[in-house]
Image (cartoon, rainbow, N blue to C red):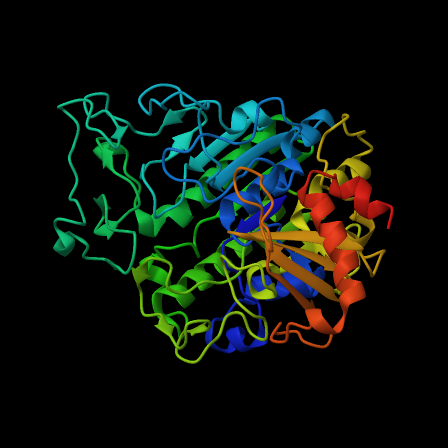
Length: 487
């Protein structure tokens, strides 16, 4: 069971302003990893790598827009396919943001929307199709939009049917944005008083309620678990539960207002914490918590102003804070950046029947889940599957304190290699794969400089050249699993 959420922060300073008793309890009872990483510093590339075992640069996956097609191919071997092969029921409930439909064809939101999660290994899906700041602002259950009125058909970008509802345009009528004002880029279609990325027509009866979205996902999770455990009580399950709660626009349910000292952003974290507690109650209710492995993590580092004015204070051009609280703590950067603040994320592994609680400094990455679970389940990966996924199951179970020798981290425009305490970052190759004449490199020693403030590339030419050769090898197509395992 994997739960992912944008910008989850567990630093002790946050707990004073944002109470997270359920997540704290999960960490205290499981293994809390202090050097875990998402494969990329933004959501779509990170989730792509998690589900496929491919680095996002292999398919040039970047942040996907409202009309983006699914970059995961139906022929790809995926995490849900692995679990299905091992006899598991599979489901995804929550924020998808991995595209839908087939490349080269427009998605018709009024008919079956596919390919999607069902075509890549999930038995059931209930989705926020993109993100809560993007259109279409509707739920998608399996292949169909929920509660859609056929007399009010949905279209994106162009109004295809004269019957379709027309929503305010945030560019022309900024006063329509009554919930949040846009600071950048979030001022196209206005739904529920919030400007969104993208243009949407129709679907008024199917619109979600931003403030009750977290409850809706919990309700669907409970219904799926109840149905599964009553019909197939002995069949194991894999549930991918990516939360939207901390992603912008942050719209916590009113019952959580004022539950933190940091307004909507902090209150949304309190609601996420409550959701963790509710899921654990469900597992107990259905008699499966003791033998359910829970993985709690985040798909990228923290961000404050991500398109809306929700009270965030920007202190400098490189550091953000909320009333004195800096979510990235000692680390440099955050979401969108390849530095530790953008890729080092919380990771809690909880499995009461199998692992002992504690803390681990093992170096691990989400891209490694596929190869790791293949090992745990005794499934042989097909040839060519998950080429960048390394087997770190011993580390995830607390049996190995070191984890990976090397991992790759990505962000828009940059790529980095972590090798032990050393980190080398460089500009990515251009889209046409032509090498840059003189790409900029940065070298840091994480043990000596956790904030990555001192580029010491000139002081360590031998280390730089060794890591440069290895990084370029991976960037030019070498499989991370085979390359790094031989080091």
